[in-house]
Amino acid sequence: MRPKALVTGSAGFIGLHLVRRLLAQGYEVTGLDAMTDYYDVALKRRRHAMLLQDPGFRAVEARVETPGLLDGLMEETRPDIIVHLAAQAGVRYSLENPRSYLESNVAGTFEILEAARAHPPRHMLLASTSSAYGANVDMPYVETDRADHQMSFYAATKKATEAMAHSYAHLYGLPTTMFRFFTVYGPWGRPDMALFKFVEAILAGRPIDVYNHGRMARDFTYVEDLVEAVVRLIDTAPERPGEDGPPEGDSLSPVAPFRVVNIGNSRAIPLGDFIDAIEAATGRRAIRNPVEMQPGDVPATWADAGLLRRLTGYAPETDLKTGIAAFVEWYRDYYRQ
Image (cartoon, rainbow, N blue to C red; front, top):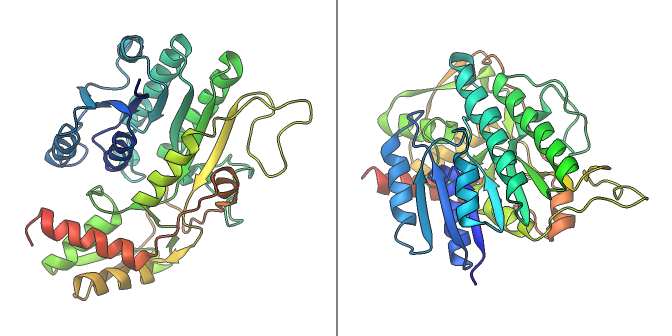
C-alpha cells in the first residue's frame, strides 16, 4: 500500500513544493487549505490545480481551526505522517490583525494535536519559524539556544505551538519534529514576501522600501532545499531519550519524542546583496527608498544547520543568485512579462 500523508496549507508556497515531492515519492496526499484572502487566492487555486493533476492528491478546502474537522479527516484517511504548514504568516500583518494569528496558528495547531492524539501518525512534523529566536543576538542560531523573547505576535504564536506540541509529545508519545524555517524563497513564492514585492516593483519601475536603511541580513533558504530537508526528516522521527538523556548538541527533549530543527542555508546575506542579485536577474536597477525598521522585525537571522546535517546528511546549499534567477524566470512566465 502507498504511504499516506496529510499536509495542511497544501495550496501555500511551501505546501505546493512539498506535496509535489511527496507525490513523486509515491505518497497518497490529502491536502487541506482554507484559501484565505491574505494574498491572491487565484495563485493558491493555481497551485492546487497543478497538484490535482496527480490522482494521488485529494484537496479539502476548509479552515484548519474548525473544531472536529481534522479529527474526522484523520479518522477517514489514517495518514502515516502529518506535515502541518497551515498558518497565518507575516510579521507585519500581525500588527494589523492579531486575532487571525491566534485562530489559525494556535487554535489550528490545537486541532491538529487533538486529532493526532486520537489517530496517532508515525511522525508529526510542524512548521515553526526562525522568528521564534526573537531578541537573541548570538548567531548563528542553534536549536538549543533559549528562545524566550519573541519580537512579534506572529513569532509568539509560533513559539506557543512549539510548547503545545511538546506537551502532546510528552503526554501521548507522539513523535514530533518542529522545523524553524529561515526566509524561504523560490518559484511560486508568496506575494507578501520581499523577493516577490521587490521583483514586481523593479520590473514596473517603482521604488522599493529598504528597511532599516539596508542594515539587515537574512538566511535565505531556497524552497527546494527546504523540501529536501523536510522529506529527509520524515524518516528521522525522534524517540524519547533513555537514562543518559539527549545526545550533546541535540535539541531532543529530555522527556518526550520531540525535537526542534533549523532549516536554513547557514549564511547571513546582507539586504544590499539580496537586492543586487535581483538587479542582476532582472537586468534592471532598483530605486531604493531607505526607511526605518518595522515594529516586530529583527535586524538579522542566521541558522546553524549542523543538527539537520547530523540527522539527515544534508544541508541546504543553493546559492542566492541561482535561486533568485529561478524565481524571476517563474515570475516573468506566470505574469507574461
